[in-house]
Amino acid sequence: MSADHTSSVISARVRHVEALLEGRGLLDEGEIDGRIDEFLAGGSPANGARITARAWVDPGFRERLLADANTAIREVGLSMAGGLQEQRLKVVANTAEEHNVVVCTLCSCYPIALLGPSPGWYKSEAYRSRVVRDPRGVLREFGLELPERTRISVWDASAESRYMVVPRRPEGTEDLSEEQLAALVTRKGLIGTAAV
Amino acid sequence: MSRINDVGGMAGFPAIAEEPDEPPFHADWEAHVFALNGALIKRGVYNLDEFRDAIERMPPEEYLAASYYERWFTAITTLLAEKGVASPGELDVPRG
Image 1: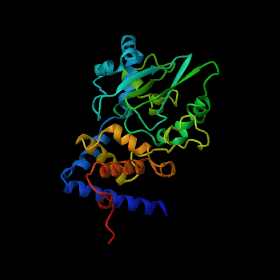
Image 2: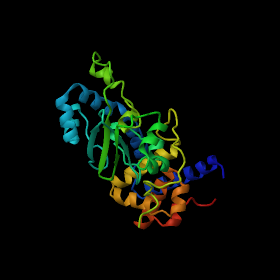
Image 3: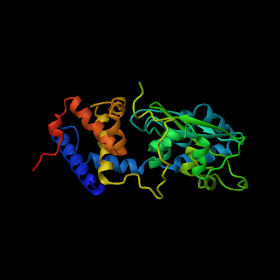
Image 4: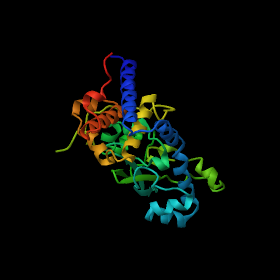
């Protein structure tokens, strides 16, 4: 069976179930499209990048962020309460001695409010199974070679808890504004599979 | 006993594949499945934990063969039937 065929079969089933639910009053007309638009317009790695840049320039914020991220991110106008249920957020910061990387071994838990939709590799069995067994090797596959002396901590997200990494501030960025700093931060940096 | 979704540390999976410029959804139906799940949870037809459980109790061979959003759709239809919203037969596309 070709992928296209599989896709058209499931596509027809999804439409059928939607129509059935509309008929039973469990779905409003236009509700699905509204939700999709809202999701796509919502979280993006720019949110996590903004948090990171603030933590780089404001040591007090960094301290509050690492102690109680749910409260601290409200200072930059963000929240973990926008989804289906409020999720506990723990933010971990990379240092010269320790590098952090996030996974959800059981499914795909991810801070969507701060990072937007997750990448396919994050949800793959390959990443979920391997990063807890051989984090250094997996990071190397992502092009991130860490010194042997750098300790690696792997954080396994759960239904109630989400994690985000604050990467290390790159050298030579002393003159950049907070906004320019935020532009350096990538989605992979916030998951821990890239340096920044 | 752990379920098939509990893959942490399991050997035998391939290298990690990154897709450049990956879109959030690879087909319209994936976006619809995503939104449908949110709508049903919001209405209290089932909750998030029941949804996750419905994915995780898929038979291992089905779980491994299914794509990410195929698993979601399987869980949605499983729960709609179990909650009595619709019979399994009604959830299938009528053969024309």
